[in-house]
Amino acid sequence: MAQSGHSSTNSRDVSGSTAESKPPFSEDEKDLVMRMYKLVGKRWSLIAGRIPGRTAEEIKAYWKNNHSNRN
View 1 (cartoon, rainbow, N blue to C red):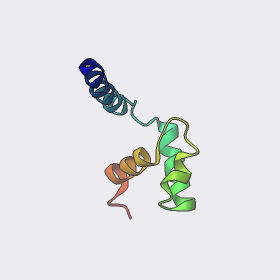
View 2 (cartoon, helix red, strand yellow):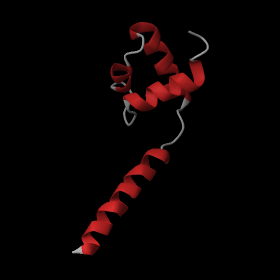
View 3 (cartoon, rainbow, N blue to C red):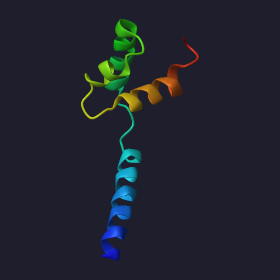
View 4 (tube, rainbow, N blue to C red):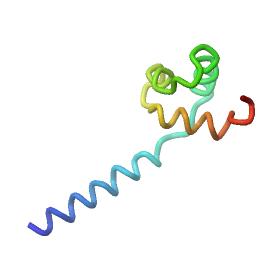
């Protein structure tokens, strides 16, 4: 039964690494984020709902890393 405890630790490691393996934002995604931001502001979940496979947290992090000085 101790082995099953180890497998849950491994599953957490795997889930953490999948978030890091996401591809960078495409030019289309970047354009859509910019246009949506102009329309709805910092409503990251609303923006993420328009981009399949992206979370609100990813959108927010992208914005902070690439556009934080502009606003």
